[in-house]
Length: 342
Image 1 (cartoon, one colour):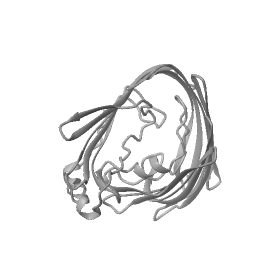
Image 2: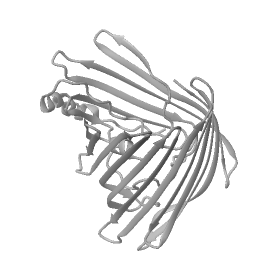
Image 3: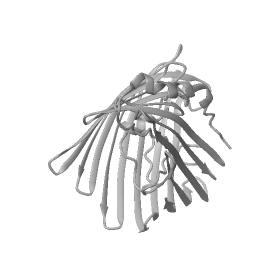
Image 4: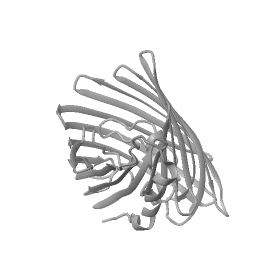
């Protein structure tokens, strides 16, 4: 089992000091902590305990996974997200959030065996936005990324390969149609983003920008790269359909070999009656080596919270620079599952 260390005692002072730094009188925004593929689509359970608001939601998923190079295996995944928020007399809002996920086998991101991962954060904010401390490394990506695939569709290589450390501090604030976000870890690696979304007639348009300075470990786990990247995502929603396109450039640097990577990802999602479908594709290059992935996803809504899901996901990438294997992936997986979201 794998348990991510949260180090919240070390960082709690940052979050508790946030109201003094930002002031204001309005409600703070929630900080996304679920960076996993399975997220609840249902309205959460909400309860009042004195002046504290408790919010709970989660997912239970039982799946059969078939890999073209192995037999069919069964997998169970369950996650839960719980948060507690309170508004103080001066109208500052403080809170604590926790997300945990357990899976009985490897997922499309390459983790093998029974795994448990968790994220936790303390938050405080006002009209000027929210500050958070804890496992907040994915905050910017979640607010600027392309939409995830439907059902069990999961597009590999979508976005930057480099990332900042798990633990750090983050900010998210809304200013008109724009949401500005940023995260930084103790080593000074950072992730910055900006997103604007607003309707135009019968269409809804979203545009986001992201820049990162992070780290990446090669496919063999033997060499670390410093990465720097910039990307943009555009999205159009019309009726029950959504279309998006993302592109970016990333630089891998060490004292030895260096490499550049560019990519383009696109997808379409639609819903008709009880059936939802998505189709996504990705193409990129690291030096002269190609990276290609595709994902088909489907979900049939059986009842409130209960759905049947399908995903066919393919990923292929093998890039080497200076004798170092940056990526080494070749797999196709079909995933069928029954899912309950609450």
